[in-house]
Every structure is written in structure tokens, then in C-alpha cells.
Length: 458
Image (cartoon, rainbow, N blue to C red; front, top):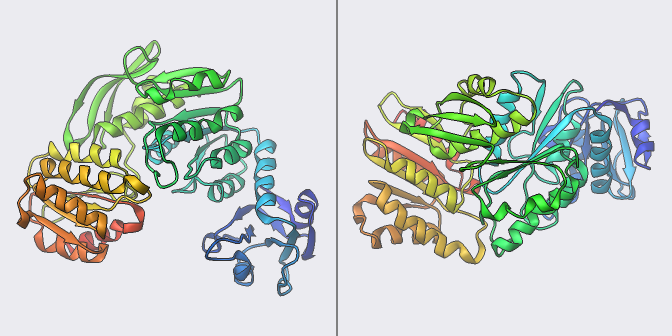
């Protein structure tokens, strides 16, 4: 985006106070992320009010978008306040206008598991031929994603947008803004069950994007996921299926080399190539397959995908493998967690050589299913690891107890209250040759456990 404050105020139907010629080149709702030239959007949340941060924000931001009736100090020299009746609505309108102004193509990625990794993989594949941008980190919500869209460089040719949700209705908001040319679904599974009570509700919520997919674009669905079977009827876009027999894009002759990754033949319609993916886990091969389906739709050959795949690495805290000087291997998947994702990684851990250590944090946003989910994971952990460190409160206790009930010996189960203590315990018990899996919801903070353990040198 590139617009002066006065023009932006007129576009949004607002008024301006301060420097009318202030140049705006991006937008941000989080004052900690501001860069020179950004528009700071002051939003009122349940705990924090962005208007309280406007003065500090304008030390960096070119302008602030604020509610018209709020009493605020005049902006400093060279900065502007743009006053509107509803900042959130104006922010979404600005993102919508920016999307329409650009000539780029947008790939929307949604689903329940693997969204972020698939997004990063696809960005890596596309960057070999295009000027590709990807939404950063977890900026996939109705607050974070519009800022990412507005702030993309002007020369971006393809923008890969992760589109997430916790509640029904959120993807409809994003769909109206983003209007993807390609829409890719990763596998669907109940994750935020605190807000989505059953699979039928989830499937409907994920379908909210389909009316906003470019009719002449492409819909990409997981052929092995029965919950997506009805989606093609909801969009006239060209359909591509990936995964499983009979799909246009699929994996053949896969060999799983544990922590060394996987090798397989990637089939893309009538084209194919051998792929060496140095990221552990069959689920990561599946993430690459989903990304390959979208990349092929945008013109990459199977060979181009294969070459680019050989240079990919796992995103930070999403399956990245570290090896300490003391001979301990750490698989850091601490970014987030869900029952399906934990099962996949426990299955990977079960196959490795050496003593298997699982550091499992609680899984959040499971609502009424939390107790049963943690009990089931505890049972699976008992059969997949040799040493268990369960981190958190009541649900971590359930997980640890379930592992004990499933036959794991009590001395091999450690129940820890927080991420910092988990790092100290792991440092004490880790031995050369151990393989340590770290997995938990973001709120548990197991990324701090990994950082502290690696810094301490085990």
C-alpha cells in the first residue's frame, strides 16, 4: 500500500487531524510490530484498548486510525490521526480495497492441521519462480491477516494467506476481504472444540470461504478427508484433489527415514519426480503434497517442486530438529497442539532409535472434550515413549495418570507445572542418545522449554 493520510481519510469516509501528507505504506493492529510508514489501527479489545497506545505508536507509525469521538492528544509533527466511526470496519474496508487494487494472485490456505507448515512450504516452492509473499507466523485471523495483506511489498506477484478461525463467521469475514484465486484445504479435525462443538459445525464453518473463491480459480481439497467431499458442490472453481488413490496429486513409494525425513515419488497429473524431504514425519510429506498441489496449479512442474523441496526446512517450533553437543536430539514442535497433531508426532517418536522422551504440554481450546482427549493422549504416550514429562495443570495430570494406568512405570512419568520447570527437569534427566519430542499448545510456552534446554547444553 502507498497512500497519503488525507487520501486515506477520504477513502474511508473519515476526518484527518495533523499532517495530511503523511505517507502510509502498511498497517498494523499490534503496536509492538509497527514499522515506519505504518498505519496503527486502534482497536478496542476485551482486555486492552488500542487507543491507549496511540501516543507511543505515533513515535513510529505515520498515522493512527481511531474512533472519531475519542479524546486523544494532538499527533506529533509529521503524523496524523484519521478519525472514523468504527476503526475495525474501516480497517477491513482498507484491506478489501487493497486486495482489489493489486494485480496479484492470492492462495488461501485453511484447514485444521498443517496450515502454517503448508503455507511456509508453498511460499518456498513459489519463490523459486515468483515474487511470493506469505502471511507471517500466526497472523491468520480477522485482525492479523488484513495487516499482512495491506503491508505486502508492491512487487508481490503471489500472496499465500493462511486463514484461520476459532468461531463460526470468522472465515466469512476473511473471505470477503481476501477473495482467493486458489483455495487449499488441509485436513479437517476438531481442534477448537471450546468454540466448535462438533464436526458438522466445523465443516460448515470452513465452508464459509467457498462463496468468495474466484469462480475461474481453483479449489484444492484433501481426497482422503471425507469431510471435504461436499465442498466441490459449493464452488464452480476448477477442482484439484490431492492425497490417496485416484487423486491428481499424490505420493507414491514413500520411504520413511525417521528423523532424516522421507523420500517419495511426487505425481502431479501426468508429471512426476523423486522428492527428498529432509523434515521428519509422514505428516510433513503430506503437508508438502498439499503445497505441491497449489504450486502445480500456479505453473510449477513436478521437477521444479522436487528441487525446491530439497531446500525446505521446518518452520520454527513446527517440527524443527536440533542436536545438542551432548548428543541429545530435540524435535521442537512446541508452536501449538491438538489431539491429531500429537498422535502424528507420537507415532514418529515411536519409530526412532534411542531413549524416547516426550515433553507434552496441555492442549487448549478443547472445551468439554479436553478431559477425554488428554486421557487418550496419555494412553498413546505410554506406548510411544520411554520417559514422559507432562506439563500444565489439571489436564496434564489427566495425561500423566492415563499413561500410568496404561502401564508406564511411575518413575518414568514427570508431572511439571510450567515450561520453565520443564526445562530444568529435562536438563536433569536427558542423556546422550535421547530423542526428545516437545509438543504443546502455545499458551503452555514450551518454546521457552526448548530454548532454555538448548542454551543450557543438556
